[in-house]
Amino acid sequence: MKRVVVGGMHHESNTFNPILAGWQDIRIRRGAEMLSPIQDDSIGGVVSTLLEAGYEVIPTLIARAVPNGEWEREVYETLKEELLTTLQSAGEIDAICLSLHGSMRVHGLGEAEGDLLSAIRKIQPSVPLITSLDMHATITDAMLASADGFVGYKCAPHTDTFATGKHAASMIIQTLERGAKPVMEMVRIPMIVAGEQSETSVEPMLGLMSDLRELEKGEHIMAASYLLGFPWADTAPNSIVALVVADGRRDLAKGLALDLAKRFWNKRQKFCFYNETHEPKEALRVCLERTEDSAPVVISDSGDNPTAGSSGDVTNFLKLMLADPNASSLTPPALYQCFYDPALVERAFAEGIDASFTGSLGAAFDTQKSTPVVGTMTVKALKRDWDGNKVDLALIHTGGIDVVVTSKHVGAYDPEMMRALSVIPEERLLIVVKLGYLEPEIRAISRYSVMALTDGSTNEVLASLPYKYLPRPVYPLDTDVRAEWE
Image 1 (cartoon, rainbow, N blue to C red):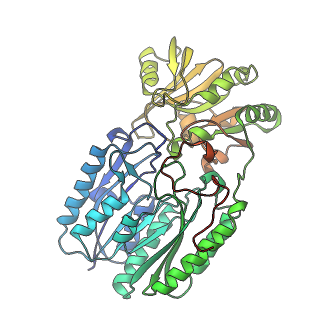
Image 2: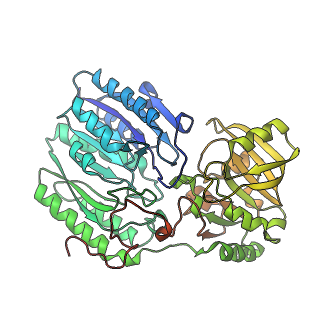
């Protein structure tokens, strides 16, 4: 029976966000927890495929957190040591298959994936090592030097995580049972792009991803990926890459990676915002007009999107709404989901439902991009341990607007968060969510939506971000950019 070690760490680290991700932010599954029940994620795809093939799966750990700032170093080093210790005690193994993000950063250290993979190679220098990656992975030399193959997600939003894990595991099976010899080649594209301009359901990404799938049907091709980097991380290197893994054919992998890079580069001017997008004041005006016939109307507060690593506590767009008599007098009230403010949640639980008090909302962590909203806060609903994730929720009414406030840094994409506070989202005229593109759950309840180009650590106007380390020149920040093959 073949023996394969599995595990990984998953985090998208936003270097413009001052919050450090700590133990309170991270969900960890260890050992047997990774084998049953199998989760609908990339490591679940890895595990299920290997078990179905009759392999012995040796689980280490899988650690995940909602995108945030960099990880606290002590947290990363502790989990890394735990994973390596399990690997060392595994005895003789045949391969390693991991689920990594690719854009995880550690405060005071830098890239996590390259560091982790290098440490694994010191223990197991020669067994096949394959890993799945997020589409927004940032590929470094250390990562390339330590792995035999990468395969990235092909869907954004990421609805193919399980399938990508299965793909990574299938590459292990090809290597162990069919004698495949994975070789990997990559070509950098001097370009960055936000996720809101690279959804895979529309062009140009729709066609580019179709090209990858078609290429993977070819002889000797084990995987083909576009890995887009992460624009809200000020790092070197940071760029889009085309990457191909071939069976024993380095020349083939290199030629195809270059061809894919050229295809992407030639379409660079076609990347744009696909949904209706406006500056904040115009977004609010347009959406207020549409509440008369298209409710619920949804606005994305895109600059402060916690699922892309922003702090989730920037108040600028909320203040714009509070100052607008039309936005602050809707019936039922406009709903804003969600603000990360554990102190306000704690106060709300202490005061109780229907209590009113003078309080402060927002700007609790990122004190540079906005200031708190101070005023009368009325507690309308409370929910302990929402969804079993130890997240406490409070529905706070202030200045004519209902605001969902959370005790932990979580994503704003789930309408069930509203329903847990006795809000029926379909009955609201206007909903604001701290998101970029609408995730499927929110899209399903929206009859009309607009993305507002708001402030925060995920500002969609990339040229406005204070990059220091991003390699330049890079498209679209610079006008005169030439690719290395031109």
